[in-house]
Length: 185
Length: 185
DNA sequence: AAGTCCGGTCAACAATGTTGACTCCCCGCC
DNA sequence: GGCGGGGAGTCAACATTGTTGACCGGACTT
Image (tube, rainbow over the protein chains, first blue to last red):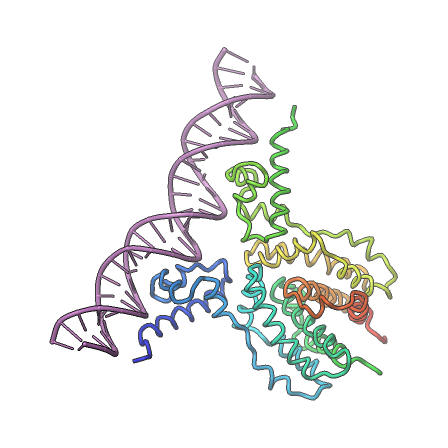
């Protein structure tokens, strides 16, 4: 048959083991032999299926949130909604984000991070805005969003982490709102 | 004499070669043998002088801006000044910042990044503020600052990079100002 | 003068990503 | 039915990485 039964299973095992390890330990700290062991197979097979460790990384680490519906909220509440979404984000998204940021020394991973930033933050916000400076405002809001994740996850600012969630949401929500729908005029 | 002439020179050579290479290529992409070659010495000596590659990295990569005087400006202009400072920042600071961010998968480097963030952004701003929520506002402004560098350097948002510098400064300056000296009350 | 330390060199180690040779087995074709 | 070919799997090897230990030589102390 066309379905390569065992092969697909093995490939899938490698894929999911790699995804888990990359999320938990990042690119450089996880070894091909670890992935192979976790998938119950041979290191050579890992490379054979995906062409290299880096390509395997790129194939497993994509960060997609279905925020299209989640951002479907009146424009005047978009700031709060976005802040809420970001603050409550976590779990696997955190691991993928950190893996991308840490790995972005490699050109291909950096490009992936750039695409992710664009499709995750810039594009959905851009779609909701209008006016001559809509693009700039969307990009600034996206920079704010990335900066929040950066402060919380990459540097791990204890002060922000310890802060009351609802206060953080309301403060950052106001910031977003100010950029998205500038006051007056 | 007590000055170990050649030794100090060699140590210095290793130090500066390592600093340059780490800045340009980051932690994982620069090898001990590269550093040794650039310093005109032996890989083993690199490890002997500094205990390990990671310790050498930590010894060479610290990011300090003498921003104490540079932020000495009336409180109502602090936002613009900070934005100006960040946007015009570059050169070696960029390399060190990126190396720290990319390397922060390693716990020690992450701690260094956290300290840097605290001493470079949070502390100087905190010193200028007062009121019950001064700490929170300082940390949010610091997150904004880090987020700007993140967007420009780590992800490399083309839209922001292409933007007119003075417009970027004025927009981000207003953002900073809003966080530092909230309107009304 | 002998001894002791310190900077330097060389060879080796284990671990890494990756490749090639080889086996095995199942599928379609004569 | 036999058989040839291709793909999955295994094993050993390679070059490169960070790091260590053995050895060497010269300078400073006693």
